[in-house]
Image (cartoon, helix red, strand yellow):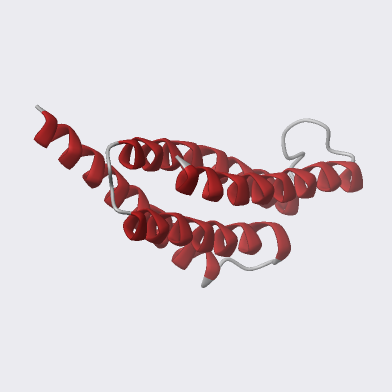
Length: 129
């Protein structure tokens, strides 16, 4: 699964950046649990958590699709789309004080990649029945 592995590595590095932003935010605001009512801390936490909610499942779907012979160009399209989506979304949450357009585009692209990866897995499962 070298293609999925490649994108998992890139996304792992992005997750690390988001993690460090949360850690630094906690140190700066002296908020050690929760968001402490701090809007900036809430943004950092939610950007990090949103990544953790969507990326693992999407990578699992990509890995399953890769194992079952999905064409390389399609896997690269999914992986690159997910990286771009998470960069836009993560940047908006962790490095800016506004939500648009990065959040909207990042969310939309993430859901599009998730939908296509799911459809590919359903297709492969269906034809294997």
